[in-house]
Every structure is written in C-alpha cells, then in structure tokens.
Image 1 (tube, rainbow, N blue to C red):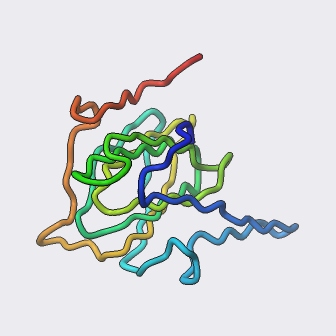
Image 2: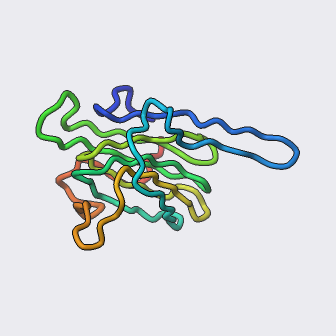
Image 3: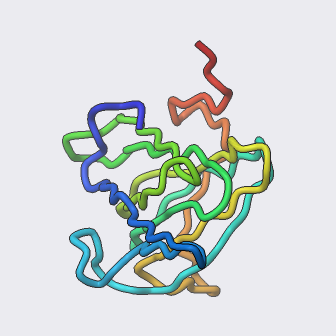
Length: 156
C-alpha cells in the first residue's frame, strides 16, 4: 500500500501460504477472522493486462478481495458523507508477489487494474448474494473526475 493512513473500515490480512513438494495451499478467509462478518457468495473475475475495472460501490455489501493469478492494483476511495477518512485514496498491490486479502466496507468506491503482463484472476468473497432484480451496485466510469485518481502507471 502506498498510503500510510488506511480508509476507515478497510483492513488487510496477510495470507498464509503452506507449501510442500506437492504444491501450495493458501487460506483466504476464515469464519474466525477478525474481518469476517458474514457470507453471501464467492465469485471470480479476471482482467487482461492494463485493463481497469472501476469504479463501483455497494450500499449493503462488504467485499473481501484477493488475487489468485497475476498482479493487480486495487484502489479505494472514501466518499462517505461522514467519517474520519472522507476524501482519502488507498492503493494496494496484490497478487503473486503480495498475498493479502483486502476487506472493503460498504459505501467505499473501489476498482482495480491488472498490472501484470498476464491475465489477472481475482476472487471476491462478499457478504450478500447478488440480487439480479435489484443489484447493490453503483457505478462511475474509471476516469471520472469526481474521484481524484489517475489510473496511469506512475514511474519514478
């Protein structure tokens, strides 16, 4: 993460990878984790190199996101009306080089960009089932100026 201050309600869990001569096992989310609240569903999404999937937030659902394959830059923006971190942006670099789970609370804008040279695979464990008739999803385009973030690579 590039910021030192984390958006209120966001948390990160270092993932435990157990390896032996047969392969690897990685625990992602357990019911006894501090950041676990409830189970809704699990889904996998992918992104091709350089693709940005942003911005959206949920009014009812918390997300618990990690990357199984590739590397992704997950970006969060706190636009909630009240709270100590209104206006704060967080970046997390997650994937094969940094095995972490990011807990994203409801009402925090979020999105991600594949920063690896291969397709990235993201797993999201959410607290609510997807409602096909009335989705709990609110969107803005990835380059919307209302969110103070530039998705381009920052060389330096």
